[in-house]
Length: 163
Image (cartoon, rainbow, N blue to C red):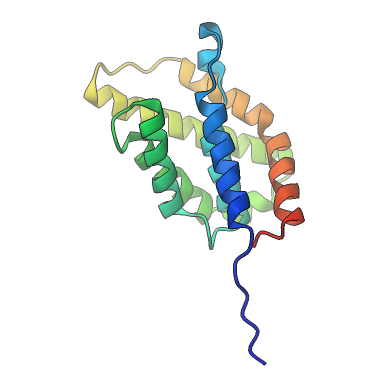
């Protein structure tokens, strides 16, 4: 008997990305803009370390293009950054999965700072090159929220048998 394992739960992955897009474009007061967590990057990193055989660089590119359209930036800016973040996450997924939550949060801090720094450099090439401390603020809030996001997405993955 030939048993073929077919992927399940694609709709869970798509819904989590749609929810992250909604959180990313949700209006906030102007003073909290720099502290907005990078929801899209965090969801991408989670799926890259949870199921790297299904979510990877191509998904990062696709999600980045959608993010470019939603945020009205240079087409390909977020796509390139998220593609690089997805590559790093897939390459290190076995190590990151073994980390305790605190070390995972620190890894998320590094990945989101990398994402923000790449975005700032690409934006700086097309306009004025200015890197300030605000690229760290969203990484800090992403790091703080990572343990809860990880548990929520892990429970969704287990409940709906996403593999």
